[in-house]
Image 1 (tube, helix red, strand yellow):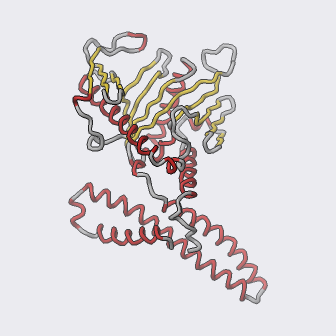
Image 2 (cartoon, rainbow, N blue to C red):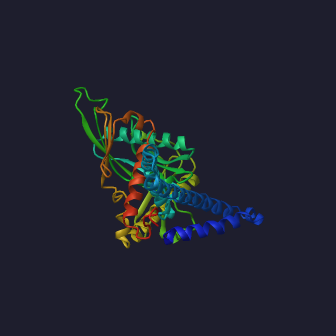
Amino acid sequence: MNERLDSLLRRYGEVQKLIEDPNLVKDQKKYRETMKEYSHLSAVAEAASEVETLADQLDAARTMIQDEKDPEMKELAKEELKELEIKLKESDDRLKFLLVPRDPLDEKNIIMEIRAGTGGDEAALFAADLYRMYSRFAETRGWKFEIMSSNETELGGFKEIIFSISGSNVYENLRYESGVHRVQRVPSTEASGRIHTSAVTVAVLPEADETEIDIKTEDLRIDVMRAGGPGGQCVNTTDSAVRITHIPTGLSVHCQDEKSQIKNRAKAMRILRARIYEMEEARAASERAEARKNQVGSGDRSERIRTYNFPQNRLTDHRINLTLYKLDMVMQGDVGELFDALKLSAKAELLNTTSSVGNIAAS
């Protein structure tokens, strides 16, 4: 067994004793954290046991092939050997993935920003389509969804929409959506039937707790104004819209969706906190550039990550060379297969550079 696996199995024994302590439930935060750790370690222990059992069965099958005199029994043992080799490989891979250190950000809630890029009205309409795709996926996972800011066009698209998603492992599932999403389709306003190419930019920000990012009041400039709607019409006649500028970084957030200035200010602060948190994470990530290569793509918002071709009902993710011919289903929120493939690719890349994870079956 490799060193990391031994360490996790020892910790599994320790956590088992912790959850037997009746006093643990008195501290709900510690209880939740301990049970979450126990769930992960249980999966590791189960996978390790399965690998060990299959390895023993494989040795027994090899011995039978060597010692068995009956030709029929030897043939049966050879068939069993092939099946066991496949099962052991699958279990060994599963254990390796469980041994990859988890990114602490994976459990974070997120703030997602979708902005129309090249393509005018068509890009804004596709921004709205992406928003619906993510919201429907969130519903299937039982995640909480909240619009924080939006700028709607007269045709029902979005020049920009910002929303939060909270739930279990949200960032882990959506972190690879940051980048440029390109769409190829015939716009509803196109009389000649010509295919247009438009682009939408998506940013996925892990949401920071107030305790994680300290924003000083003196570093903020807060402006209030009347909210405006599509076409420039007034949403209300009070100064409810809020723009908050973080002077040290120059970051600025504008919120106007709520009729209450207090609510708009609270939402703007959440967005600002997430953007500052992302900047600090990016700075830390640049200091460990080699580790960043283990992620799927750079996550740079200027990077084209995916193409949605509606005439061919085709979706292509350029980072992992995955093509799916079910774009109609994807746009309805059926994106689990895509997100799982991205996570699997990221872990596989990380495994290639994680020296602490050896061949479990051989150990």
